[in-house]
Image 1 (cartoon, rainbow, N blue to C red):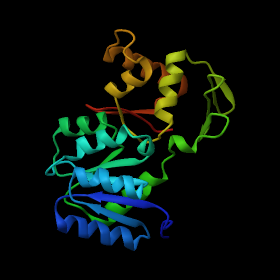
Image 2 (image 1 turned 120 degrees about the vertical axis):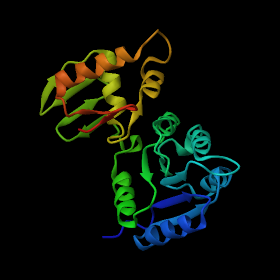
Image 3 (image 1 turned 120 degrees about the horizontal axis):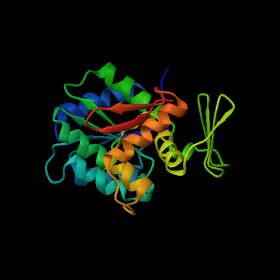
Length: 229
């Protein structure tokens, strides 16, 4: 079944063959596709087309994908836009750098069209913060997370969480499947107000697993954590 034609995707890569391959397969799937050849063009095109998802190569002339992503994440209109990196680079530092500037996922080269389309379909199905209910509640599987009351219910049973545990859970659950680095977690939850180490985050994650189950939060080795629900 094709996706809604309203969904727009911006592809950013300096290789014409890659652009053509991705454009062909995504148009076949029913998406509107826009193209850019470097980070500078990506920022300009994104402002015009306001895509739902942006696929960025990392290594590009003029401005690389990581810098383009960082710039766009500072703009309100791209707060909830999915950002996915397309890269042949397998170095761990590249992935960490990408997640630190707000990437949602990675797609590896060489590109396999079916896998690419499947991954993009899955990413676009993820719950974004903009889909939060009007009463500030997130409902994911058997979990209900009430931001206003700082309450969590699992299968209808109230689960008592400390304030920082709740805030960490809410951050991760606001985008299921998105990987949050420790740096991003620190910035969002502790805001540099106190001296916090990776150990502090690990302890809070362990507490969440003890109270909600080991499979609620997954560890992405060398990068950070994601909510599995």
